[in-house]
Image 1 (cartoon, helix red, strand yellow):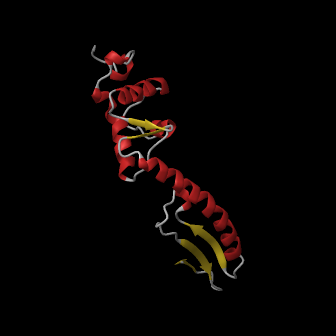
Image 2: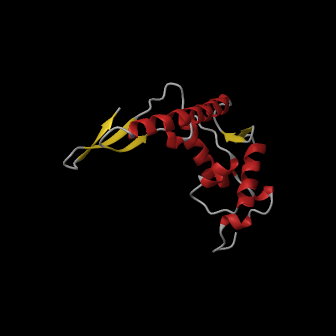
Image 3: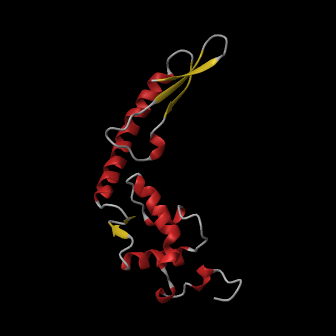
Length: 153
């Protein structure tokens, strides 16, 4: 490699790829593996922060990791942990869809209460839920003197 060349610019074929090139991808996969959350290819691409790659070079690195059995792939999910996390993620995504329907109804109902300024639900932003995960609903209430407070339900 000549001085001043970026190492990713040399990734033209798989014989030039080393395991060190996979480090940023493995770092992202390792982080999400802590939370038992396998990633899709697009999610993985968006969460690789330490290097700048175009999508084609990124895909080539991921394919190399799969061929070398460093990265696992099943059903369009990429992971380094255990395969059962895929089913867990899919079930969690289904729970979010069901909870979102119920939450909309509850939020509309609660917002009709007097002095309610806003209603916030904490876990729906994660797009994945688990059956034992607590759900918090926060209410911002205003009294007659316009001093608000937040109440956790």
